[in-house]
Amino acid sequence: MSNNSTNSIVLPEVAKTGLLTFYCHVIESQNQDPILRDEKAVEISRQLNPVLTNSSSKLLQKLAKGKISKELVVHITLRAKRYDEYASAFLKNNPDGILVNIGCGMDSRFQRVDNGRMTCFDLDLPEMIELKKQYYEETDRYHLLASAVFDYAWMDQVARVGKRPILFMAEGVFMYLDPVKVKELVLKLQSRFPGSELACEVVTEFFTRKPWNRMVAMKLNQHGVGKDAVFTFGIKNCREMETWHIGIEYLDDWSYFDTRHPRLGRMGMMGKIKFMRDVQYTVHYRLY
Image 1 (cartoon, rainbow, N blue to C red):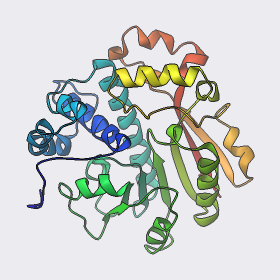
Image 2 (spheres, rainbow, N blue to C red):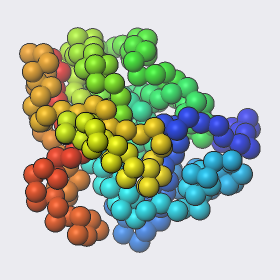
Image 3 (cartoon, rainbow, N blue to C red):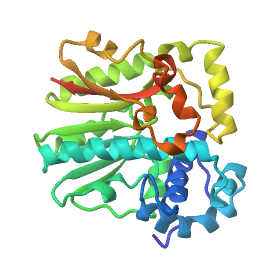
């Protein structure tokens, strides 16, 4: 941790959500049989807890005390484990490949999946990256990019690494963004980085409409997700993005219900209903 660490944290709501995800990893990692083992998160939390405890934010204070719903912890860590699996499978086929984590928050995916040869770019808002730099050290293979995702200048830094296979990952990001800009971003990635892959979380379009998106926002807020967290981007089905451009190919999709993990409890039964399974899920594409 840097000696420049502050005793208080001022972050926008969207950045606080990144810390919520991070603390789900912390809590789950300390279970006897964790869904996800994230030792780096646990290590950082020991340093971060006193800072959050002294924060003026009630949410950050709750995080330091580990007060997060069990349902959310299971959901977040099942998802993170699946994205780690996407990354590991990609690196098995492309050991010198590049991972780009869009909206990375305080996540330590690079440390969890590093094969000693890959390069990783963690991308998030400047406020979040400023915080992250106090706990993570950049190297020649690990880079922290402080930028809004729609400020495409960050792509220049990725391109400078050279022509290598790239996996772009957007875990828990796109559904909160402007639909027109999300489509523009995907098409930009397709044109700028042909041959790359994209794994991104989405919601069914139905839940981006009023009043359903407001009902979802209330539910998210109950779990501690920021008050501005409203679903705005969704797709009709997993193959919709293929209609955006001939150079987008659907590979597979995944819902956390697919794991059939026993800790899903009664929620696991709901996954047998396709509509419920596809409320919030991940799609995986190749970009040509």
